[in-house]
Image 1 (cartoon, rainbow over the protein chains, first blue to last red):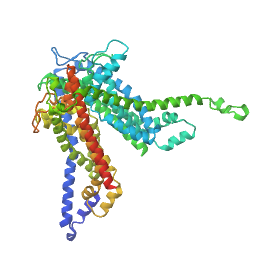
Image 2: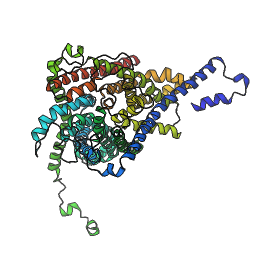
Image 3: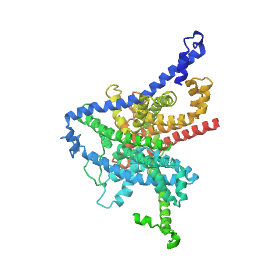
Image 4: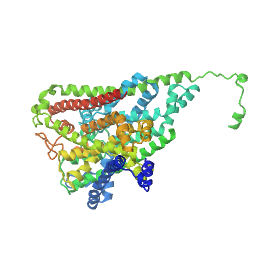
Length: 319
Length: 305
């Protein structure tokens, strides 16, 4: 298309061939539309820059008040109390527990489900199962939070947790439901990766006497591995960023524990928690939101870059 | 090693049994694996069913006209969701009105006009992919620092909430619209260009008409994500009891997901019933949106065929 427009401008020296009337109007419209569309494409860049700027300044101010060492190594998180303490480790531990529980539930189930849809299910079963999984993917997180607090915790966690008594809030209930929320995405991404594996590989393995399970685990799985890893990274990133489910079902008690029967606070649920109480602009409590937000943003950014890179490599391999 | 491979015996001479002794074990493992794969899909479907049934049963006593007629209240028996429904319609409607043109415009630009060899185009693409993976609560921080306070100082208003949700769903709209545009056969575009149409004429008369079903479906799904979104709006003042319907962009607001959050987090058990009933209302609204997406897709597909 650049070729066609430059061709027109190049013939301009010959007076009679100058675009006039209708054609000229068309070319002007073309240029205006192009400029407008280019501006719309810049909006997403502006949004990212705005996020970065809005995070950086209060974060830097926060670290003039709280030393970075205290933030990263302190084991007590009580930024909104007197005396305030800013050790982020309890939030990291809480985020880690929730993430591990969610990933332990959603990755194996997601892979098995993807194997089923990609290698076993008939066309009719797929036509039913896939839209229903999409419905699960479309359930709002606040609904999952309600479900975690009033069904999963009392009916499953409190009933079957082997060690000690579980209270109203538990990391286990929150993590399991975060895993359930991620599950449909995990299935759909892993299935995409598996469907992209060329059929000739499967046929070759069948011809050598493999069973369908062996084709799944020894041929399809390794061939789709990069796509599957990208899906897992995305699942981890979403589990880390989930706010509402954790805020409702894991409570708001930041404690340094690895016991999933306890309530915990994660980085994202702290941001939500601090946002509920209206922090006055400029207070340390207000800046804390940004410091934790920066940490969360950086962690998920690294994970996303990693996943994008893997997916790109995976695409090159099969197209 | 070498001695063993050198002495490769002829099976007929030594009478090696070619029968696969691992076969029974492999067959059992195959059945187990097959059952496990099907069970994990069934697990997801059963959990969805449990979630829907449990919520419906809990909320059932309060699913009636009063629920949508009454305003939020501190007294559970009178508590309704009306202002939150209107708040959601305002915020989601505005955010869709802003981000759909922007997202579709970006998609057209990247697919039809931009030269992908330029570093800045690749930067925009990478940026969109990353923006899609930013946790939604971080968009709330952006709204807090930039729109509610700071440079724009719009306060905790409908406008602030809508702006943040618009940015939040923008990457999703761009990505799905690009896929829809990419699915248009190149022969259509090439034919139009060969007949002398400009790029924009080609986009307007060929590309858009045949990609609209995909664009509309993707956009509506993104908008339904905005309708269910709660985390960023927690930071933007939507968690308050609002007892009036907003009627401008500068009004305070609440939205349905956050009113549900509030009723769920309340200590009184009666409020949990109201929360469950409100969830049914929210799911019904989402159902209407998604059904319209399916309707649009089918309608356009039939017309094109």
